[in-house]
Structures are given as C-alpha cells and as structure tokens.
Length: 352
Image 1 (cartoon, rainbow, N blue to C red):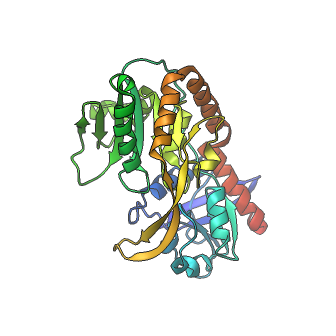
Image 2: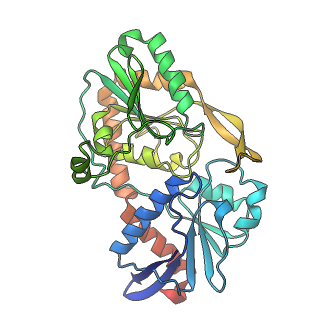
Image 3: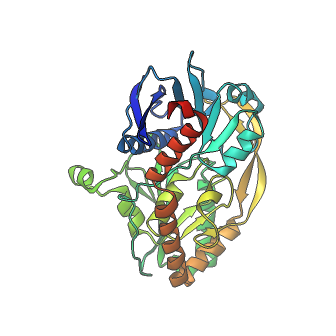
C-alpha cells in the first residue's frame, strides 16, 4: 500500500515514496504509532506521498525490510538490545541509508553494517500530553503504560510492588498501582489484582472528544491522575510511553539503557540500577533468533526510587517539570519531522 507524500523543503519540492504502512506488523505496534505521528507531522510541513518518487522510506522492523526496485531505499528501524542478530545483517546491508530514533540504536546498527545510520528521534504530541500540576495526596498513584511482556519490565513492576507492600506498609496502604496494558487475550476492563493494585486493559481514546463519545476518559487523563511513572524496561528502541509520561510532568522511574538514555537522565528522572542479562530473542513463530544482551532492573533499586519520590515529592515534581520542558523543547513530532527532512536533504541534495 502506498501513501502520497510530497514535501516542500526550503522553497523546493521533494517527493518521497512511503510504501509500508504496516499497521502493526507482527507485534510491532510501536512502529504504527511512530509512523502515524511522523507522517502527520510531515503533512503539516506540506507533505504528500508519491509512489513514483525515487526516494523510498520503509519504516518497519529490520526483519520486515525488503528493497523496492529502481528506488533510493531507506530503512527506518530500531533495536532494543545489543547486538543486532547476525540473521538480520543481510537486511541492514541492503538500504542506501538507515534512520533510527535513538543514539543507542544508531551505535548498535552501525556496528553491524557499513551503511550510514542517522538519528531521527521520535516525539510526543504535547497538545495531548500536557504538563500537569500535582499534589501529594492519597491514594498516591504509581502508573505503568505499555505492553504486557517481558521486555517492558512488567514482571519487575509486579515484584517491586510486592516488595513495596512488604517493606513500606505505611506508604503502601496510602498508595496504589495501575498497570495500563494492551492484551487482546484479556477482557478490556479494569481488574483488581490485589488490595491496592489494578490492571487496566481498556483501549482508551487519545482526545476528550473521542472519550465523550465512548463514555470514558482519554489516556492523557490517566497520566494526569498519577503521581509517578514506572518504566523498568529491559530495552527500548525509543521509549514512547516514557516520553509521554515525562511530557505530563510525571516523576519517572526508568532503566538507563537503550533509547531511554536520550530522553531521561538524573536531572529529570529516576534511574534504577540494573545487571546485564542474556536474553533469547525469538521470532514471530517463537523460533530462536539469537541471544542478545538486555538490562535486568534490580527490584530493590526500583523500590528505593519509589520511596525517594514518595518521601520527597516536591523534589520529584521539580524533576517532572524539567522533563516536561525537555520534551517540549527537543522531542515533539514537529522536531522529528524537521530532522527527518534535514537528513533526507543532506544525503539527497539533488532532491531538495
């Protein structure tokens, strides 16, 4: 499927072919969001898609990439771990240029190919994920938003919550955990899993207008109602939900690895200690691809940072304000679209 993209750049016209609107190919739903938001931002800069253009951008997981004949083929992809599996090396040798949203992905992919790799960061819709003022009140709400899988660190959140209840009972009885996840095998509803913890499998709309039609509330309101965000991921290509949480001013606990290191540091968030952990990377058919190195967050460190935020919330809110400003000044989709155009113009000046 093709979409027509014609881009006006510095007063000239540049056409771009964008053939793979993959719509969540495999389990890669993050790519879908990234693609829709980036294309939307490009359209605001005067973009249309042209299937006959010489420059062809395929935004997809590495193992889905294929060449389109008689085009300048560009792969836009990302990796969460280190290294790139050897089975994927032939794929990343094919394009003329590779784009990726983080310096971690740039380093790891560049180590595996002679093709030039450039960073085009992701973004946040700051009109939706607005900065909020928060007060330390009961129940003090810890929030997770993301998929329900091993890489996202959900098992470490569960272990940390158990330890939080055991070691900080006075705080625990005044706090709660909400894990907002997408899992088609579960009913799309809120389920209480302990006296102070809940899983939320509903698909929440992004805007208040859509929420009113559905009789619910938007995802941004869930971020706004929370006091702290948990993201002890084992690895991220970019870290979209971390970026969304930071944009709302939430104090965020995160693993300082992979794409998340471009977004957060100790000045604006709460890193956790971790160990390097071998992880078997498997394909869609559960076949073993290769063992890679992932981060294994230390549960005690997660709980220590939860305590730090809970007990020193004014300091935590200041970090949240710094995070929100960073997202607005560096990580909007407008920034991402302009960087994309700058990189294309750099490598294909004849098209600018």
